Length: 279
Image (cartoon, rainbow, N blue to C red; front, side):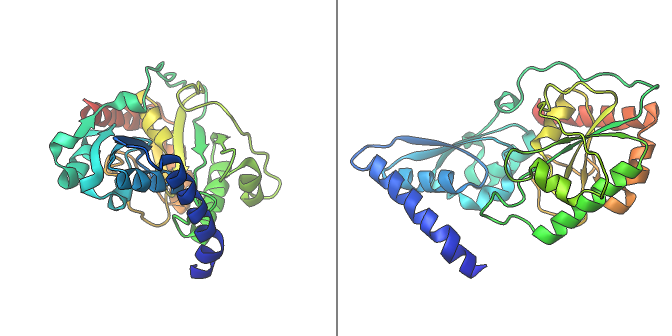
């Protein structure tokens, strides 16, 4: 890991930092606006801006509090979050006056999802993520890959339809296809979570909770996480309302949702939770 950082990360870090320092040299910086999640560029920009006297404004990709230790409270002017429990968490560090709640920052006005169709099975929409950001390992890669592999096997063996929402980088079509069971014919989609319109949808992601699940719940699509090992998550992904399902139990879980009663129970519980989280 240390060797990989020195050979891959350090030269890139120096190059990006030097570019920002040159761009900001001699200028007065009042504010720097960046996403709240970890990225090399955003972190270096915030640091260079702080050196020029600027304050950081954080905007949510997901308002992920697992990144909270990246930010020094003295340099953060304000954070906007999409969920109440996330704001409560950040307020412990920044104070309530520097935390704003606005779900519209990540949730535009969108059409409701389709209602349950008794004549169709559940459609699992499996959202790919960013397990490595191509350069910064976030989780145990081997464990995460195994969970993906076991999840695909379980879903394909259940009486459900599967659509895979891949990433153009990180977890690509090619990467997902390479770990799928031999002979499987995966169906991929480029349609965004806010526009998907499939029968009896359930949104799922692997290891970490995708923002797409939050988006889905906002329109009445239930969601769950396929997770072998627990990871620290942003607080509004409450396992009391958003199930964490082990791959070994995934087929049974999905088969249970081929029931209007069970699907709606999950859906309505998550919608009530969502209303409390977003006011």
